[in-house]
Structure formats: C-alpha cells, structure tokens
Length: 92
Image (tube, rainbow, N blue to C red):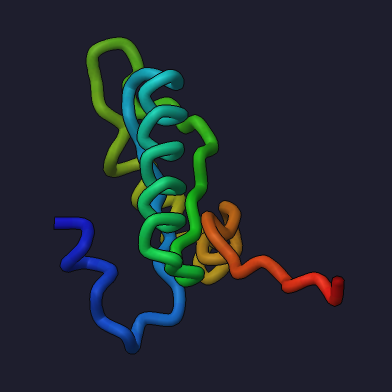
C-alpha cells in the first residue's frame, strides 16, 4: 500500500510520520521506512521519527493531534529528515 501512495511521480515530497503507542515501535517503523527509501533510491521520502504520545490513560489522542497539525500548518512539512539522498561522487 505504501508503494502505491508514493508512486505518483508528481509528488515532490512524502512525509511519513509513524504514530504508534510505543516509542520502540516508532523507531522500528521509521528504520523500515528509511530502508524502503534506500532500496527505491527515492529522495522524495522524508521520515519524522519524533515520538508523539497517542494514548492518554484510556483515550486516543488522534483528534487532538490532527487539530494541532492543522494549527501548525505548512511547518508540518519541514519536519523529519530526508531518508535517502544521492551520494556525491568523489573526484578521485
């Protein structure tokens, strides 16, 4: 499914932000996304592996997080890091 989401060539940037209950799961998923970007040599893929709590007591925080993203606006797109970028060739 992810391949379909990032397949349109007109997309200039794809920001993936895994939001999961456990910080270790966020780290693991982020690493897999970086591996995918490297395998595909796709420099459009950015990963934001910042852990954001999604569960408070017995309630999910999806709605609050979505509202905060809307308030943050375009700055959301500048988060994260580029998962793969071409290496410069040395002049050796």
